[in-house]
Image (cartoon, rainbow, N blue to C red; front, side):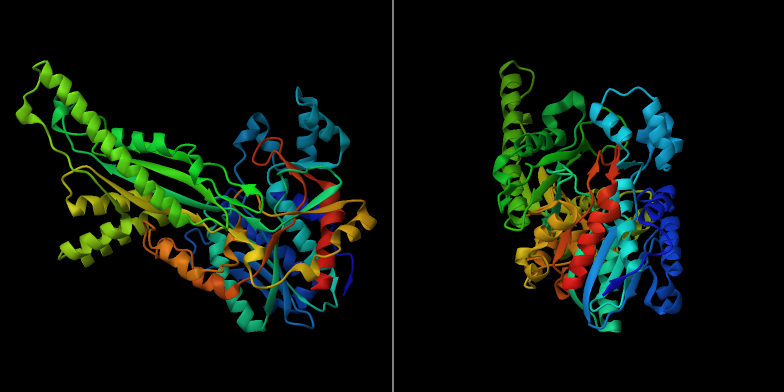
Length: 542
């Protein structure tokens, strides 16, 4: 394997990628994909072999493609370099929004302004950091990957470049790339040995003498807890039960619950937290809300089971429902003792907690028009999602509410399902394919060449596209995905196809700071020399 200097430097490619706005979840991402593809076509190898690169669109509602390019080697052994080309929006820059995509001009403007942050001032004055939206997250990683694609020559192993949209939202791009990876493997007879996602390293060591090789990423599940109360006018409260009381009790029990922590390889997740909590009334009136909902953010590691999280929510919801009914009983006792209500008016509530998949089965068995009802609901929600009128999370809530209404349950009830996105927890130690042969001795290699240490980290401190490249237990994951509150046509994680790929995946990227904030920046020595050299050495060993 040898390398040559491409027409563009890494910094030039970084500046060009940053200059193109690519807000996640918008059509702006398409321009970014087109520019990446144009950069690939400038590489002489792909000018000669245009069939080895392309734009892959599997029906994305915004037509955002996966950009791919394959540099074939003498062997089918293949390294996949992956990154996302979307970035968060630029409103955080305030009156500097016009400079958010111009690193040098932004740096000058920040230096001219008031600076209370000494670390920021030092980085601005030092010149080793590149500022701007998307510099760290993650157009620097894409520039590194493009450089390796352009500079590599006479390869033994093959090199596959992929760039995906939507990572900042629900990873629709990476889910789209799963089929692409399968197609390319068959078409070119590839053997996927390793994938590297060049996301920035932002947790732990940000010093200039350490580079992280991250072996896994956390899983995320987003349970939806939908409560049905009993509708009544607020002047006649003892005739019904407010659904917000039920959801509030559930939220109180779930928030920061430490028995839902997950641990693996000395790493712990954050406890669960409520990301959404509201009633489902469309307008204001003086009736109590019949339906209320909470969405729970719950993280887990590979040693954990998302099904256990859902089961714990079932147990918590039963207790919360009992407490809510008991609160009604205590209030009725006081009012009856004072003569405000008559005992004959007491409601005898019998609440139930049900999983969404069981509610679907109940409605299917009891409704003659089930097929028509389901088809109409699915089509409506699919159109609303694709038009951008509602989010996947809102679609999930509306799907659950429609089934709960169809079931015609008279008593208070809680339904529990799972909304998108779902990120499986992954770690290379759970993948059958060994990666140690291409990692051993890298710290010595980088120490001698760059005076930098290589640190192996078990898990990334959040979710990433790495979740969708390996799956050691597809049967268990599929069983859990049956709890999803949307049909597959709207959202699915194809765990069977992911298991067929079974690619051990690492995260190796440049140091970044203040991701998604106005001070976002990336460490240029990592971008221009250290990470490219490390990736080239891994490719050589593959």
